[in-house]
Image 1 (cartoon, rainbow, N blue to C red):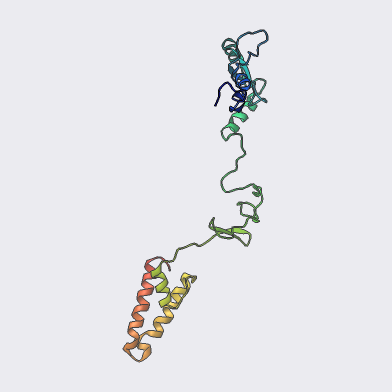
Image 2 (tube, one colour; image 1 turned 180 degrees about the vertical axis):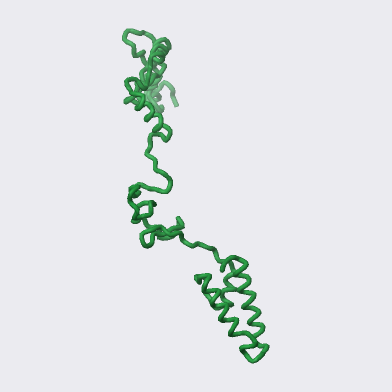
Length: 204
């Protein structure tokens, strides 16, 4: 390409006049100061993100007298510093949300608005009869499933029901209840082993 072409400068990312404008140093904000204002200084509270442009001498002078908390009471300063710890964002205590019930509202047992629905049980609790109840989420192992099947029970059975079923099956399959027949001994042995395993694993 011919560098002397009249189109050469216009196809650059920025034309030369704009490049010169962007690289020009700003003037110091102090009236009458001929020095370039290459040093930024914050304008103060209520003007966050806005800056003065000073020369070195004037930015030093400005920084010596700068006080962000000027005209604020000690209480206001303490409140501001406390809020700054969380980036001036609102916070809530653990276990509450934006629709949390008031401290005197016992409708949700102090846990927040009962309108909140945890349909899939991610939080391990459900709201029942005016209170929060912990969900029973126990993972059933394969051996426990087999033991329950041996006793003729499903995985949602309660511990008391396991014990009751065990007693029924023992009486039903005991040799004394079957004329001393040995055909029930193997089944009885399986029932006892299944119950012992469930008991040892803490299932009942």
